[in-house]
Amino acid sequence: MASPEKGPDHDEEPPTTGAWENLGRSDGLYPTDRTAAPQRPSVSPAILLVGSTCLALLVAEAYGTRLHPAPAMLLVVLLVGLALRDRWRAERALAFYSRFVRPGLQRLLREEKRMLAGDKLFRGRRTVVLKIDMADYTKTTYRMPYGIRRLFVDLWFTAVDRVVARDVFLDKNLGDGSLYCFEDADGDACTAALRAAVQLRDREVGRFDEAFRSRLRRKLESAPELAAVTDRYLDGYREATGHDFWSRHTTVRIALAVGHVDEGLWGLSSQSHYDVQGAPPILATRLEDRASNGEIVFDDRFLRALEAESPGLLDLDRLEHRTEDLKGIGPWEIWVLPEGVGLQSAHGP
Image (cartoon, rainbow, N blue to C red; front, top):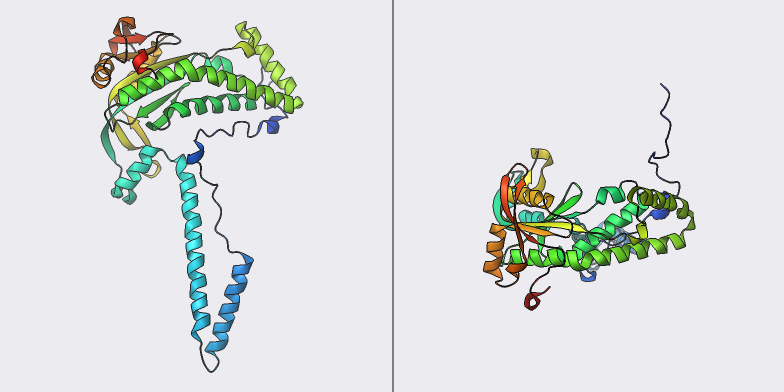
């Protein structure tokens, strides 16, 4: 069978793909949170030389007339030093890799010893779920060249990370959007989540657009060979949307839900993964489906919990109230913080 022809829309990685490597370099961590990259434990030639010399002296003394304690003590000190050095390096490597382990899973591993024996663990936990979705994400990124898309996504999650990283114990992708579970140790998770939602919508989205355009322009200036593939994408975007890509502005839809989730290890016994499941993530997803661009939506339960935490944080007269038919749930009373409406000035983010 003849191979299909490659049409003009055939997706290929451009030959200049390598020029896009490491565009982001923005892992979202604050400078004080970053640790050095792990290094493989190694022994320097000088240590090997000293150790070999001491061992040779010990062997010579063992077969001689008398065994002096000095070489033995020196060898013991050397071995102890090597052991401590390797352990220090291993701990530093573990600290580095722990930034890739979700805080919730780190806590479970520390607190629940029976997990180490292979038993699954589930427990209920109160949280606030924030679901955020970027409008027209697929239309914007589907035919993006590899490197532009990676820069776009990396900078977006870096922007979100700056706002929520210190308050959440789990994040995960849900289709085009992402979901974040907030810690509720002090009973103020509703307040923290709403502040984060408003900051993301009203400030970080604009900062993200500026950062992305700036970084992309600098990259194109430093690597002219990328111009052709970028121009093809920009022309296609203009033809599909009727707008110039450089004037594009990101908009988001956000939903909030409060309740208890089941936190623990899910999946096959030998392939379990850490996750949370339950009604709040589903509700947040369904609420976000009914939100319009720029809206932050939540239900009665969240509003009551928020009023108990931070009375007066919202001007209730400026909220919109409506009933929506949520997929798989049915009619639901929701409240909407419209685009352009923020928090009360005395409580602003």
